[in-house]
Length: 199
Image (cartoon, rainbow, N blue to C red; front, side, top):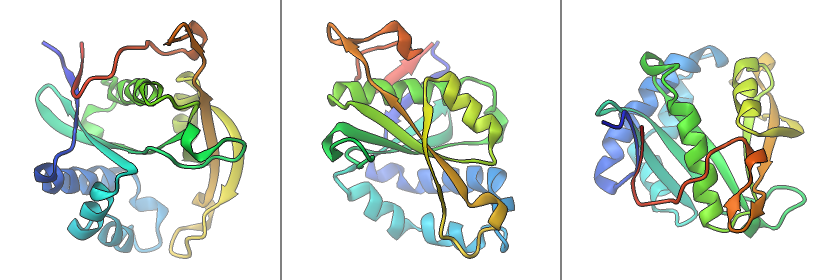
């Protein structure tokens, strides 16, 4: 039996996505905000906000399941410009949210592998993301997955505590040889399907 399943988010899944987003966000990120993240959660995870993002043709949402239970979600921006590349060459990994109860189960690593395979199937040249410069474990996780720091910036978020506003931009170029990712990419390539299951 496959423990991890990543499947596209349907419109009917949106309420469940909102619930898992709020659960995982409040477990991991409320300490970033002067108000405990109340305003951010209200703005970012309302039904209208998520529905608007879900209907955006440039966005792709996926549900993350572990042992049959919904434990997180993944959001990708299919053409999001990164300096030095054409917009159409780039895919942004905007969010991987996973509840703490399944930390260490390998879901994050599988979500990254899925993202890289998905991007390769779309013919993308690079996958990029943003990570807080204060989150050493997160940065190390992405580095182990083949991402490298390429820029820095500071978030303009007045309700966020200043020590958490610094960000790294990290990227991974998708080296292609004979139509498949090469060994140096540090991930196992597999064909993208409508639903991906991982053993």
